[in-house]
Image (cartoon, rainbow over all chains, first blue to last red; front, side, top):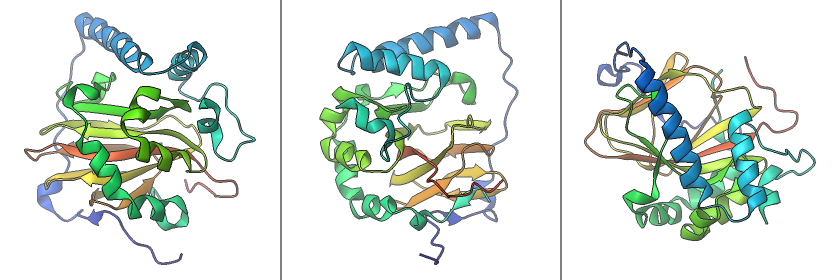
Length: 84
Length: 170
């Protein structure tokens, strides 16, 4: 299809939708600890909704390396096929 | 180019045609079904971004797929889909400028519940989401998103592998 349909309304000129100002966010050691705790809670909560140890393992390793583990490049549907 | 014509990708029409089915499944979820996104440093107030994962980096989130079976079926048919889920941005939340990791994927957003006063900037272009419409962009470009309304902003977020032969425009 050659017609470019924009799903989003361009609003560069809309002053109301100028990105909010980014305030400096100094990080303390408490923030670093809190961040680590959040990751653990995230992994725990998502893992608890995954059936099977192998898939839980893949989820954790994928999260660490931020890529599917193991990737199945031969499948057009990618790793989504590997769950069943 | 940072935004791509979504209709180059066959799955987009299928998603848009079924967006109300997806929205109905989203609507039956409770607040506790969503999980706070852990990378708090991406948030101006360190809070306000939650997700409901359906697939994450190729792994099926079984319990969540059970809650949203039609959505799970739809996203599973997307070629190269590796991540899919609902992304919720709370009133006042601002995901500060950041760039995704280069994982050879494009990102697709399908608007599901989009109030006024929320938008996304990718590189130099700022746009608003629309309910039932997809946008595809390269998330390795710097981007940010914000919700200045008094309602939640919900979208279906997808990462899919860049199709073979499709040139990423740098």
